Length: 508
Image (cartoon, rainbow, N blue to C red; front, side, top):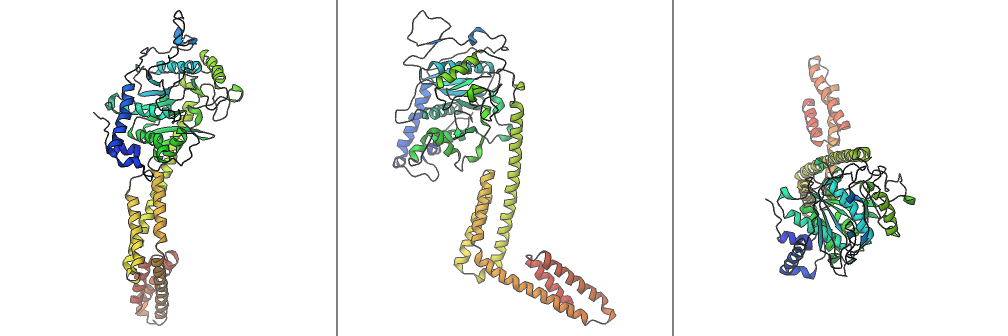
């Protein structure tokens, strides 16, 4: 049984980031730890107030939808007492903190997460499309009904705190009882095809090191919808994004928590554990004129959903698409196999496998080059260090140690490649004094080799006795070997030195 432990390492997740400026509040670790524990306790207590919707019935084909799939009118919770029983009641002025629509009858290990703090009838109507999707696939959904941060925080930061609270809840459970992935959905999303399972978008087993999938729009990261794995890595990333503006107050965040998350994702410790996928998979926008489009970022028939990020007059645009969704038309609702997803997704992961294999090859080649440079440098130091000054030898040895440490560290493929190349460049920049001495010695060695060839050829001219014919052939063979070595491998100094010596011996 695994449980999350909150210790100094967990505290450092919130307050001690590599190369971040030190906050004056970080000196008192007891205060920081108490603040973190109170923060977690706040969320844990909030989950006690839950509303369970245990209806686990699955959807039939869209030609025979049950009555509850019709989208009723909305009214305020304080409305008339004689309202129809089929009406969906909006949250009152004091709603439950978190609503958990708990439908795991299908054994799904994926949960949805959403924040819906305002009594917005359009958003309430949109959430019904998610409930239909949930019932069909057995997804629990955690909806935060009130903003929990004070006014100094942009309301979008409630997204990060809510995701973080669910991550911590799940990690505190035995592993076999946890959700494996959470999918965040903005409230301005409408499920258009409830027959598409979320599982189809998740990384295959051979991408087990990927803990977050994201999509971009024209402005960069769009975190309106994203899957994130229930994993300690995810806690670190979301925590870092939430606290980013506290420890980097001078950094401009154009899109608040979205920009903070984008910057944290690209920290060197996190950059290798997420992937960007095509936007249309789960974050499609409506087409121009509200029609289907072939644009890579716009929704097509059979796609999972449509997202209204940054849309002017959003309520009207959403109501237009909600009217379509409520018709349950086969034009939009179809089995997964009739959509473009299976082919697109298979091709995407095949491409990523190829990229990973090519990256591994580049890293392997860089490691071989680095190890060869270390061997040659150490050999050069062994031979010529006596001709160098101490302040010339010391930086070379330091760069050798740095490169060797880089090779021994276990890091992501791309970072490992970048670090190797940087360390190789640093070592080469320190080798000028040694290279100068080696170049002088190499020139002297080449001169000696050519002298050996010249003397050997002279020796052959003076051998006239037929009895020494075999000796002449031996000398000629050695001359040929040495000439070939000088042309094809002029940097192999040891072989040149040995062959020159052997030629001199047979020429005497």
